Image (tube, rainbow, N blue to C red; front, side, top):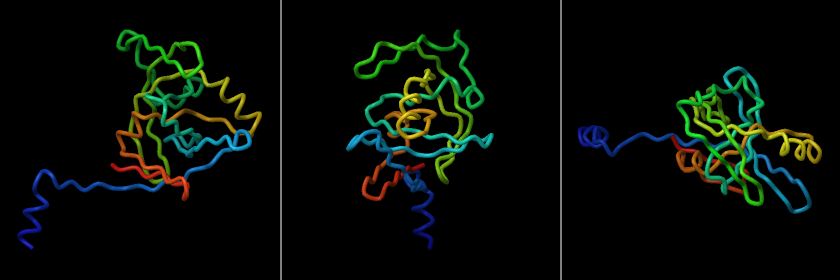
Length: 158
């Protein structure tokens, strides 16, 4: 028992929790899929996030202004975003209010805020759903994300 206590007290021994979160497969066209995950914000509002492993930064829909606090312009750098095949988009920065993905709770998260109306128009037309944001590599790397496509499960470590 004494050896176990010594091991636990060492700085390298940190308890890490793994959270398994169900994913949703969305077919936009035949054989054209996105994977998505549902969220619930602290105010009870639900959201649907597309997981975008090719995006460097997590982005959120600026129209959902009851779910974030803007970072004042004097405190932020002017930020521009671009996707493949798109022009630069002016963005703002903000902190999302706490939310959860399944049992995984996320505190205030710094995100880029952009207008997702063009994406939501497509989504609603095809699958009658709207998204609140795109989870990018910044988030996926921070929480050591693993995506199991066969089980449609996202595993995050905190």
